[in-house]
Image 1 (cartoon, one colour):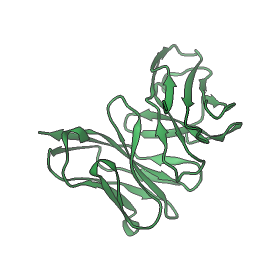
Image 2 (spheres, each protein chain N blue to C red):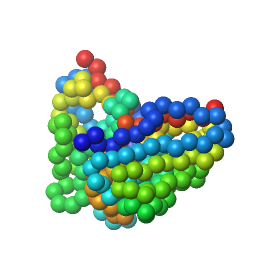
Image 3 (tube, rainbow over the protein chains, first blue to last red):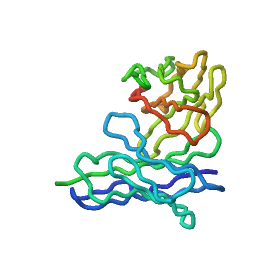
Length: 112
Length: 114
């Protein structure tokens, strides 16, 4: 069965520091992979997605993610975090059908 | 475009009561879905629809019914609410069926069942 693991429940970084959020997936084929961000009291917004081609994907707000098939990972990165990046981040897998599977999320706190 | 809208924003029910959570989108999207979000469990798919008249179950469908009579609307019904259904519910839509496409999420409905 498909599954998504985000091993870090909560991460705290200083403003201006780099960020990496981890995501591992379980899926038989090359999955469709997504990162979404959720601000408090809001719905989810797509940051970026991967479905084929270049394994380094650029997204909105300066985020990027790298698909590593050998590690079954799709980690999200940002070189310099801004205070407005504080939010909950979700990794998701599309199963090539009509279903999506989300990780449990990573909460990001940014300290000045 | 209003995008995906959900009503109500908040709701408190007593055990055994029924209600319908409303979801509408004005983007002419084929695919619509309902998720519940619980602490420590992420989002879990309840039901989805790939077009008017077509619905299917997701990961956690028990206790919920859906129908899709128009492209725009996808209501979620709780026939007999239980405390285990206390959650935040999100509706989402995407351009086409198939998990390749970006989903657009509504702002959510926070439901409490006492």
